Image 1 (tube, rainbow, N blue to C red):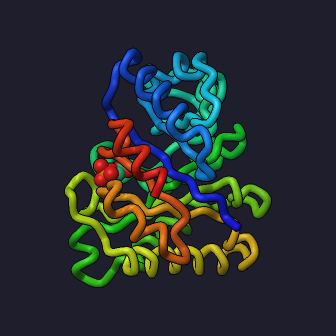
Image 2 (cartoon, rainbow, N blue to C red):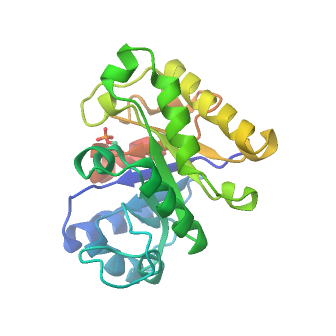
Length: 247
Ligand code: PGA
């Protein structure tokens, strides 16, 4: 009932020419897929990719600021992203939280602004290795989810995608096992049911992310509560990303 969504987070990789080449090939290769396919390139490639007129592949950004416009040197607004064809925006990625010190309150403001601008947030949540070891995984993801969704209205919730990304699994080659990721994701869905209701919670797509590759994607997609993947490293190469989409 939920359409699977596989999104590529390119992070700080690829100049415009490389982005165009990859997306041209990807769009052709996945033209008939039932899965929703999204790529999130650096800001600099969005306008050119939008001009390609991709048929299947949708565009997303990796971050944005919550203000409409003004003196915010170096920042990009939600309406600027919409203007260059973005439909999604990754918010609260662990690299933003850790390297750029983004906190839940800021992420919440970004989520609200994205929704107001008709951008679909891909809200990232996940625990550190230390939090996992102390048994705090569920507590951490429930808290991050709850704080990021403050003031999000019921009729906006289905436009939010959540990505559960255990931080220790990002870019490390280590993955959570499918069942374990499914349990954490189920706890996120239970949180949504408590904050809203079960029917709305059942509409929200929740992805797994962290070292997803063609040879481990099926393990995640076979789980009852996992609706897709947020893919970093393996989305930088057409063959691997197509392999994931064709799980
Ligand atoms: P990875 O990154 O697939 O390279 O582990 C995932 C992410 O950071 O979204």
